[in-house]
Image (cartoon, rainbow, N blue to C red; front, side):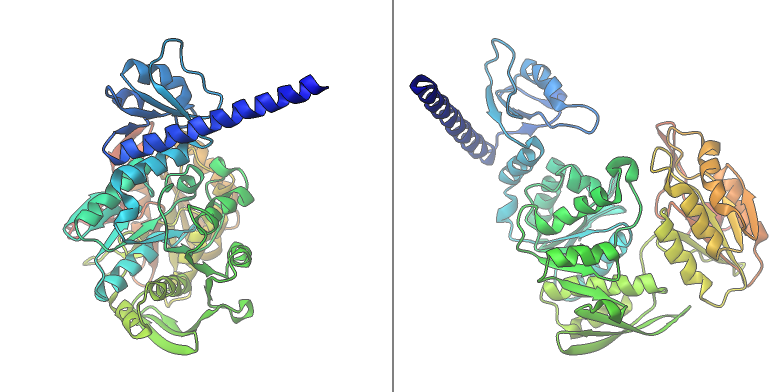
Length: 502
């Protein structure tokens, strides 16, 4: 009995020594990275003397590339506990419970992220992220901030812009972008934060000052599997990453937003429905084809915004942007500059044309987004609503008939076509959406997206409105792993025989 107890003490002492050694090695590595040691998560890029982080991937575990990194000359390996380096390896192994988070910490050390002193704003939610980041850029710039934006459309700051390949870049690249912004004099970074990025710790090492939730509706269930898992990924922006002490701006008209607000009792809640008792209450004075007249009450003050944007969902977006701006010190009188904001490329973007047709391009690619945009134009004074839509391949199949149902509820003419089929058969994708179109007044099906747009334009009468949904600002169609140039706005102009001017 005494021997077993003594043995247990010996084991505990040995484990404490191991943990202390790992902590010391981690501290040593962080200091080396802060002095310029390069860190890689791709073994092919490793150079002699550098560090390699074995990041667990969605489909592939980075640990299997440790031998390759060692062959390239890596002197540091960061991996999960229990990892054993090949016999004879000269590198130092540093165990970390979460290599993804470790990469964020190392990126923050390398790029001095915490030392830049910039305000960090993260916007998450199924819909509205891009519009809100554009709104924030507009109102903050008008109130003497120098703003950088990272999002779905592009990454930009004054004097620089580059198109984005994903909503939220990978962790190391993200810290590098922030460092470049700091060097350019940016004082506030506004970024879209996707659920994938949150789940994969792509924003690790970034201390957000403000977090915004727009809504949580069905999307990305091919990845998250359940709505609760999808919600919990987004909730991490508010309750973790890396600190809880941040200003939270939450839409309580959304049921998941109300759940989140219970966890964040100090948050600014916003909404258009008085029943949910938002701390920032929006009251629609009018909503027409000319725009929105919105009254806002918050903190014992009230003010009004006349916006050229249309639709209830844009009223909600305006509230979100105002809540974040207020958290950053903008006064209510400074919010009036939102009256000069005219929208985002590919978000209910009008396609001007000499024929006088009412044509809009929108990024809506979820049931909820389609519901929002089509109900918006349905409530205006158009004779008929026509809608072109498709569903993305290799994504959540369950939402396809729901997208059809959303179109069927509001459109007089539903035009079903292809979106980004990726590696799926476009006709099979359309077959998944077809059940949702049962009972539609008129349905047109064209697998070729250009032909579908041409058919919709040909069916229009002067007082109709056409919404081409799904791709918005995108300038490509992804088929079998290749991206072919395709832009809905350009295609409309070409079919109408007009030059593309914007």
